[in-house]
Length: 103
Length: 103
Image (cartoon, rainbow over all chains, first blue to last red; front, side):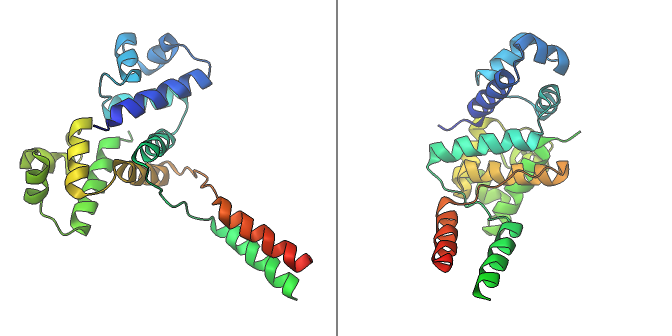
């Protein structure tokens, strides 16, 4: 069974390590018990929305980015391709360059 | 405080309505109590990872898509722009068209 809490745990740990923080530092900043944060990172406990909010703040990462990383990991596991939108300004510059070359 | 469960609830309700299902139908298929699913949709209860899995199956939607929708909603609220990757084949066709015109 595909469990969202496992991916959330992996994402939180990766972000924490990338920022060079210890469990103790993040737990302290987020006012979460160290053992609880450790269980969340290992995918053993569900993080409540309030705890996710505090941990995201402690890591200085938007919650949307955390959930996007979670979604990307789930998509890889589910073998689902979620089409990215080509940014509008990229399409605009593409069209204007092509048109200018067509003269 | 930005609460992930509110966005999850909104996304689950939207997907359910888009598919034309009632709360009762989805609760039955997912083996979740109707009142509980209703509270999840209203953002009042956290959905465990197991329940998210069952509800996603009952809705016939990949969990990754649900979390992507949640992330997109959070990004809009946080006013965060998560850059989409421009698909590689779009870049390749852009480059080949430009090169052929430069010919």
